[in-house]
Length: 271
Image (cartoon, rainbow, N blue to C red; front, side, top):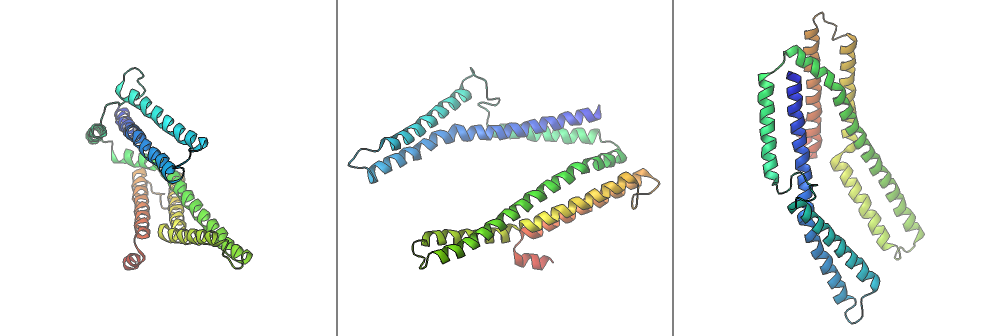
């Protein structure tokens, strides 16, 4: 009964968070689509004035801009109907401000906290539940590690190709006047990627996440097999030690992330 009540509260909170995301997208589309028509019309008029002032605008240009305006107008009308008409009923929270949904979310989170405090299970049960959740935490850390590893590899390959292309284009065009624009673009790309790799440090982030995931998995396996340091006679002591150790590993991971987010001078001061 206690578990079902807490699960129901969490389900309500997750549902409200999703509704807030959906409502934000709805508001962006509702007000952004009509606004997007304005720059399209200005671009159409600007081309007419500066490019084809004394002649007819090509039919292809008129078709592209006219079709874009028609599509944006149709989308805007459809969204207006879904927002202000009850005939379709496709939008769950139509005419509902985002701040009202946020208030509902805050109240739901408060109810969840109060219910959890009122029906708090014993420490041993919470520790056992904590151990069961670690598989999901390990999967999350490894997923983020793969993300940063792929980002690092993509940046490195772009740097390889960019640097090689600069040398190749320079050697092909001598003097490099016909390919000046290409060289500028390649040099700009290499500079931006180098700066981004130095700022975001995806390789270091991937290594830290993978290391934390491996350490947590090692402790989870030791707890499951009952080997050192989780070979104590009392199961409660093993669970308490496991929770303390894993929280320490997670705190170290957060500290490393904060050090990576700091400037180089700040990192040296922290170290």
